Length: 336
Ligand code: FA5
Image 1 (cartoon, rainbow, N blue to C red):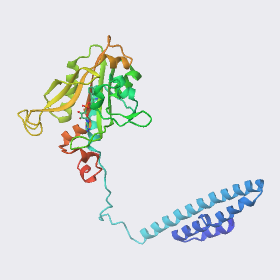
Image 2: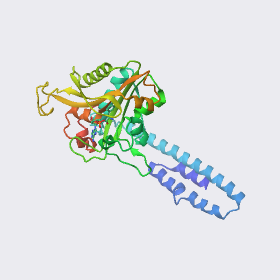
Image 3: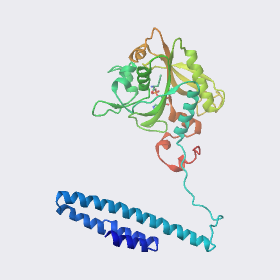
């Protein structure tokens, strides 16, 4: 078989002849494949030797076929060029559809850039989370009414789909200790009915800074820096009391409406302020759960809805567009 095959490969004069030969020799019903079927009737020693030789032959033939194919194609190109034919460079090229980043990804990258510039590290956590990290360690014991604020997808094995990125706080404290400056962007899940501003799957970005003497003033400064960089202008913010079991005191940070400048418009529901970002000083119980002594260290934490931030930045009025996978919507965000 080898000698006949080598002769035929040598004689092949076109790419299609080489391909035909490949199928005839090495294809599913090819001659070599057929020969290998006899293997099962052979004695062990004979089978070993025959198998090895057949394999070597297979490798040799496929390499020769490949070399021959390349040789023929090269000759074809040379021939056509020597006949004076040339490429018409004025012909339009093949156009490819170019993808673009998702608006949430664009905003996430931008927030990451701003925070890493301020010395924060980026950390990660699992989307399938343990009850301990999502609730207990965040000062939300079983039967605490605050659990209802976040309708949870429970899994059969007792784990859950994280309802917020706050579990990353505890994981980071346990892993790195104090002082600590981290952000944790990620996907969260809540068993909510969807409307124009609520999805069951959305993105948050958690942030936390722990050190000696960290105060609310530090929190406000960092939040203002973030928002003025994102919106590319000076921003006015205000803090209102807000309740989250894992911070004390807890706040809702509002952004002065940039559409009306604070005088009232439909975007800010005529209040002049847009509720944007919950935050507060880390509760001593949470520091303890993270292995940090609250007598020695204090810290602030915040959780910004990345999906909502992207909607505000790009003027997207319905959150469902962002998870729709509709390329016509996504193509408008040309950052690649
Ligand atoms: C929290 O999830 C807190 N873990 C945030 C926090 C962190 C507070 C640290 C204090 C300290 P809240 O449930 O308000 O808080 O969600 C935070 C943000 O996530 C909201 O402001 C909103 O932008 C976004 N968000 C919440 N639920 C949804 C939803 N169903 N769809 C889209 N975005 C949502």
